[in-house]
Amino acid sequence: MKVELLSGTGTRQRRAELAALLGDAVAHGARLGFGLPLEAGAADAYWQGVASEVATGGRVLLVALDERGRLVGSAQLLLDERTLGRDRAQVQKVMVKHSCRGRGIGAALMARIEAEARAAGRSLLVLDTTTGASGASVFCRRMGYACAGEITTAAPFLGGRPLGRTSFVKRVPAPVPFPLPSPAAAPPPGVQFGVARAQR
Image (cartoon, rainbow, N blue to C red; front, top):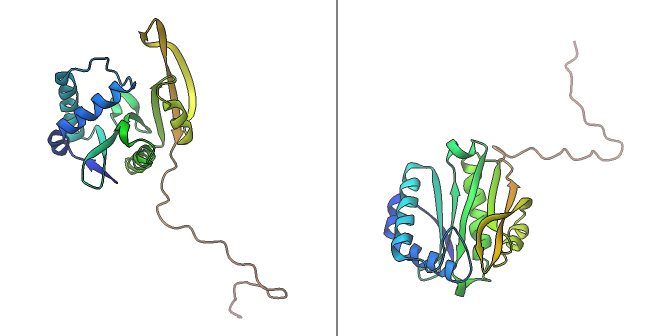
């Protein structure tokens, strides 16, 4: 399995696979801003919009590919400074094909998301998910995200019960531009280190 960064053109070329992945996620309980049944036209239009944002640099799209090059997962990073600010980015729509879960694909996508955030100079990641949705909250905490709050009635009702939203945040340390020097080793007993001075 490998994780790749898609361009706007690459997103359009894999549009059908991405639409199928989105449909699989929604069918197995993920909300992701879509309801059931998920219409093919709605999924296609969504990925067209994503492709446009990727092409302009406002969004990062990562995909996970299996050994045969088939798309089995994806994750997005929203970088739009107009809505987020230059210090942060929003993790969106982390999806793994239901039949491929439990193989570390989601963790690999999240690790690459953090690397892309650092490369873009972002130090704070924000992630919103439906409260209790398919173990998403447990996954976020396992990836080092801290719960920032919950909104009980933010999402639509399902089966007569309100679906809340949980917000998570994670600080992403900036990369060190060059290796830091290691601390000097302590001198052996009876030996002193110093700076030699020229005698006048």
